[in-house]
Length: 540
Image (tube, rainbow, N blue to C red; front, side):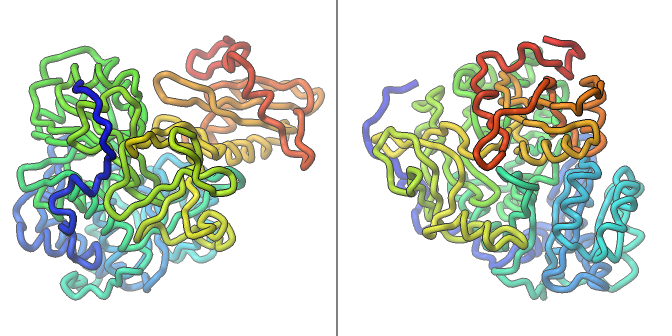
């Protein structure tokens, strides 16, 4: 690591040139059409098991499916998509957006409670699901009166939508009527109170994120971005569209796997990695092998690097991991500059704002705090999120004073570098997933044998945080922790199911407003002691 500098750092000083624009298109469909038309036989997407989709095929299939969707998807209509990592997810995305519709993403592992909430809240006109998700969607359909059509992706990939593609003439993407201000995606984010809310993103959000990404790290036809994340996140679509805009290719894993990771990297010549949460820690736990350094990876971008592992990651794998701070609302909000990669290894810095973004570090009154003091990250920039679906009052509160209130605590040093401190919101972040404690508590309270529940985060070296549930049973009721977990599994996506269960024999301490007072629970020195551990199946 080189000696530390004392000069002020600004990311805009290190993109060449500062007024360079990587993305000139006015909507995502323009990027797709131009990228596929100019280089039709270059792979757009390679799946780890060998499936290769050329740009030509991606465009043609997207146009054909868009033609079918034009039957019933009108401007601003919402369509839920609940699919595993299949090419058809991306075909559905482009087909919906080309019709000026809005994709609403649902985790393919979601269950009755979480998927049901999104269906009711987003009022979709259609759902696109895989065969494994069909039974759940049919079960939930009576509670979603706006849902007119269920499209089933089935059969050999990428032909899972072929049954629909020939029913209407293709939609010509060269004549797309999309407008920059059109909302095109909704991702549900966990809130501190109540159920998750739908974060609305427009073309402008996507164009800015892609432009910033390409300005901070220039790419070309030789670059292949490795995607090891679920497609229902925004990140894989960002990687694909960024690749289309720069003549590159995205290489996708069906799901992240330590044992397959380096095999996929080397087999398909990946040059870049985007990772989150426990990916680096899990890779470090894997057995060392020659493929860890026999690759073309130029760098990795990671959200929330474990600083204590950072140096070991660089040494073992042979490339830099750049820390990045972002959110669904703000997109890319900071990144470690490339020229400081060596110097900032192991410091925990999340870098600085990219061009056009601003972050103020504010106190509870939104007044800027002194350098070195932790405060809430207040975000301002062009083309951040549009707002929360159907929640204007929540949107107004989050954007008070013209700054997006992230709920995250950061500090800035004398050079302008930022450091993530913690979360002001009551969110549990497990392996990169944001989990609303309130949502899990609501599920637990829905069990007739449970009077009250309190859910808190527990620190975990592998996953960052784990979910712990304190459960108060009805008098005279006997319930095992396995039964609590099974109940949660029937209602929630697997990553939201509590790992630790502890029965609370009496009522919880409460605030004056009768909310459960969680501070005494969080203050306990060892949160896992005396709790039942789902992973070991035993009491600790």
